[in-house]
Image (cartoon, one colour):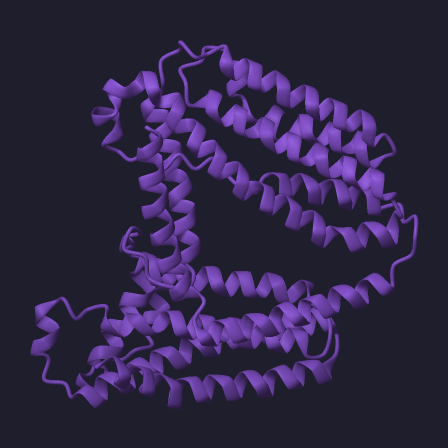
Length: 403
């Protein structure tokens, strides 16, 4: 069973690296570096304006640590067929779970340490904790994460104790109490409580060695975890595992009626109806637009909001380009007496409308967040230039390159 998990982990990592290469292409990496640099600069400037002993500093530290604690889920890599083919090996499933825990917990430690590293400057400026206290809080954080993995293993067995399967208390309530104790001046006691929690759940886990393994529960949890991973990648690239479902969306008929039914608009009619009713591309467009608006609402400055708006406009435009070939598998589209140039122009009109709407929404959020007409004017000019360059020059080059 140990070899089986290693083989699956190797295949899983290859798949993840394949998607990461697609996501972190040269353009995106360049834009991401600009965004991270701007965000770090804004974070640094924000820290300079803070004063020690702020009343709201400790609650913020507790909330951030509690949210960081939820990062990193238990990756069992179970597959649907395991309920049949691994059933004879159920007695050895503990060996398999041991390998899964080692990988998952190692990855989670990286998340926890990185989150605390980012939070450290804020803690030092607003609370001035000693190095010893910070180290104890870090240890308590890692111990609580260990207890969550013990709880995850318990949930995959047919345990009758309902309180052990109730995730709210162990994922949110108990860690909240421990963090409150640790941050509000008693980090030693907080660490001891975290240690007691971790040891108790490990002991509870061992008590259920003879309990039957809940294959369906384990497979369902793993499928849900992987769907979350695939949805993240789907924000940036097409994922075959996620198949969108077409929806009628009658409430958008007024928008589709703008396109006149004429031979000239054949592909524009097809693309506009397709993008509205496609679960995959419409969801991708909506999620990125809403995410960009939310981030722009919280970002202040002259150039950082503009850079963020440019980044998300590029991401949206780049991810919508594959929609051009969405209907190529339908044989009837090849019978259209429509020139390729007319098809490209129809798609450009669609892209111009979608990116233009997003640019307007981003502009509104920039103006609301900054309350400065000069920043709004800069965003208007830069976004307008980007939309024109993307639709008039970048898009035709991408389509020509794919032929």
